[in-house]
Length: 209
Image 1 (cartoon, rainbow, N blue to C red):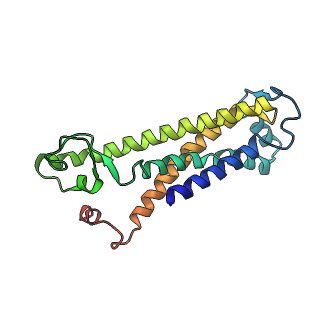
Image 2: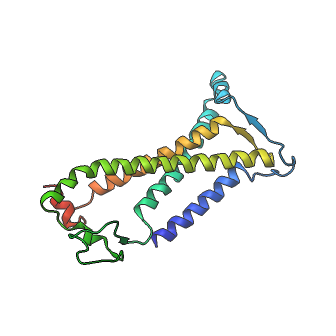
Image 3: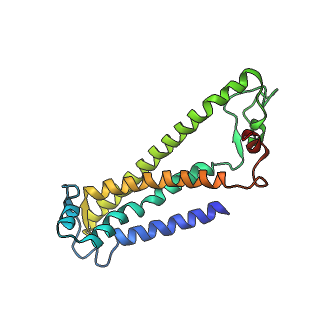
């Protein structure tokens, strides 16, 4: 159910974004490849600052960031809901998780959460490092998707003549996707820490002792 709601919201957001940036009123009236490319990054923003047009400056600057934050949020949600739900495939054989198994069949994630003993417990020390690595990888994916989506929009604006293709839009949109990802990570961490003891899993309570 959550996945369906997220997908519907993602489609609505993308449709609104394309309507706002590309498919504007009269976007086909000027002919193909009639757009203009602005290579001087942030030149228009500097002009707005000089004339002290702060309202429009804020609208453009903040808007280019905020409209692409959902890209990073969707990347974070995709990591939170992996394909296959609660069932994962074993990456390697382990006597603690799949003893006696010769295949690579799915098994519940809970089976891999059994307490580790002896030398296997030393692997816990590397978990924060792996977690940071996953977050950096997720931010990189969000940056890539934000860049590609922004590049596609700027290209369509040039082809359809529906706006000015600006380099600063590409930069701000990509930055907005990265910001959205880290804000989603921060929100996930805060919400996880705010769980009541009743909502927390037994292993989470044991780790806090």
